[in-house]
Amino acid sequence: MKSENQESFPVVFHLHNFSDSVFKTLIINYIKFLLYIVGCFLNTLLLHKGVINSVEMFTGY
Image (tube, rainbow, N blue to C red; front, side, top):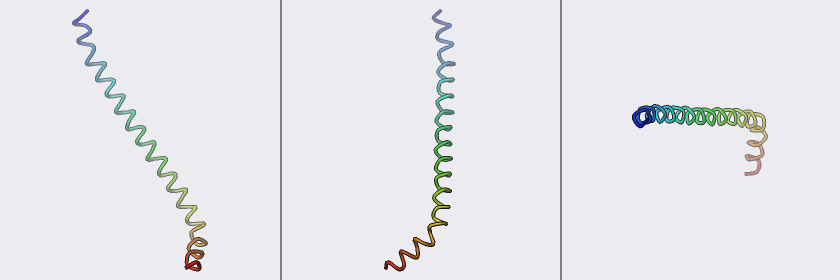
């Protein structure tokens, strides 16, 4: 039993590390994707409102 546990433990540990790294990369990619969507959304907002805001800023100064 001891030898079986010693042999199976590194495999489980390796699988746990593998799934953990995959999970982290998935989270990082998801955050990048969300930031990209937010960036595009803000870009379109700035394109639509940018002209009015820039005119207000220039006339304000």
